[in-house]
Length: 560
Image (cartoon, rainbow, N blue to C red):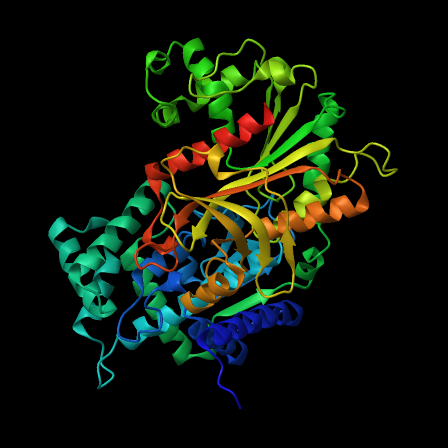
């Protein structure tokens, strides 16, 4: 039998993980320490995702990966032995604590001391994401537990010291914290410097965001949970997927309600006949570019007098959000918070009310050029993975069931961050096609954006993008294969699903064949370069320039 290449093995692992995850949703439960759980773990081990760094090294615990995962799971997940995934929002009137993870918009509820519930509203992509993180967490927990005792099965001094730290964790002196970091570094197989850096990062989010219980508590409870599992089957970590969960798969219940709410708002504002331009983006850059300069003048902000170039100017708007929102609300800006459960908020901008508005000198928005058509801009927050198909598919449907009131969509722009393959953080990627990983689906289109639209001193890469199953389900070999065989320039999670919905809408006759589509991404990471994966941390202020440059180009296209 012919040996598989490492890239082929990675593809098999992803396909297997996807198949097993779907099977588990049908079965209803699994135990990470059981047969099905071990199969998921084997897939992840074979894949060895770049984002999980040293996961496959038994000598060390992967700290960056732990931080990445904990930021995307509810606080206290390490203490739980029962994890429930359900599609029912049953907790509105309950007294259960609602927890929104720091870096994932998902609703979670702490049911009891050892039980947490995830409300799944974003489809299969969210299920894959959660199961991947749980699998990784369990693998690292086993490493930690193996370091609790020595060869004679006696607890190590370091672990005994950690137990004492946990008992009085809120009253530790600075010296005791330093000593605890040293002990934990020995348990983790990491240097003091690495452990100190992780401790500070966890502690910052613990104090400022209340998003985790700190590094000491995380390590202790992960190891303790595996230890208790080995002592009694009653303590086995179990993941339940409720029968109703399968109702969300391909049924678009949440996407339908979200789209209905959005279109009702357009009808309420009597904007249904006007040309509509849809932008999938963050909820600050479009608002700040259109209203920021005039808003700063109106509220007599010192920033209104600055001669700073555009990107320096918008960086100063962070503390002016309330004032800018208040000003924008008087000039055709409407907020539409999500109530469907999709976690996708929207903004509507009536350009007919922008006449006379003063823009930043570096922003070339020709309002008079579109004065006759009076276009409307709909900004929708980022979708998550395959959820993008559900929301866009429903949004592009006509206003009524008779299909005689089409939504007058003139352009769809998708901007966001993505992993880049040939470049570096901060570079721009313009997609010419989307290849959906793990399927034969691929979509080619004419992108209404070109390299010359952007500032000449920024690197712009043009080519196909791969739409991946999840940020945690990718590795170097597979990405290099995509790069060599498909000439892909980057990877993201939503573009292919958006284009699938757009193509479907063209076939159904809901939108015109010549609809303008624009796909632009800025590089948040390079998964092929050590130290530049998503687990290495967010871009911070360095992401402002590419984010606003893409937004600027999209707006100038709409107003041209």
